[in-house]
Length: 178
Image (cartoon, rainbow, N blue to C red; front, side):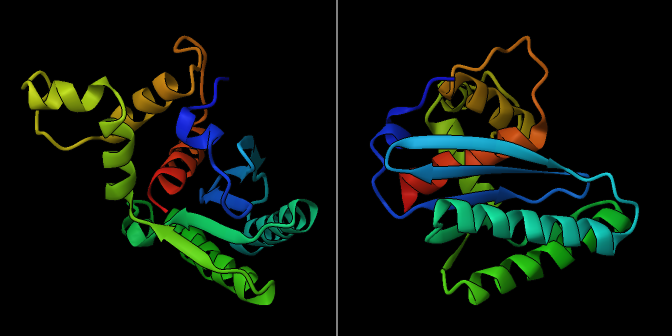
């Protein structure tokens, strides 16, 4: 994986980036021009157990990497189509804020529209929209995935987990805009 210039030059506070998911949660650590990434795979059936697993997994990342800021996608999670997923995501959103408060670190919520625009503006995708080669002129989730694959030099033939892709998109957006 190649690191986009904006991330390679990043020298801000150690940031833990979280892409909340009801079955999988992507994460990235952005620190001194380096990026680590991973995925929490949630196998538990109950909402409580999933959130519990994530809470302690995220706390371990905070402790291990001396995280100074917690970054995640903002309130768009509340419009999720699936009721059960929305319940998990709302609970997780609250617990992320709680973790930040307990660890005395700030939270940065990035709106999905900001993330989509930032990633697509950095790639050929935005030029395609302006040239009328794409419909609707509003970047879609697939456009973000395509942009991240391009920015990070990921293999487009490989199966990428959407939550990992989104965590990289959030990391890129944070480094570029904050």
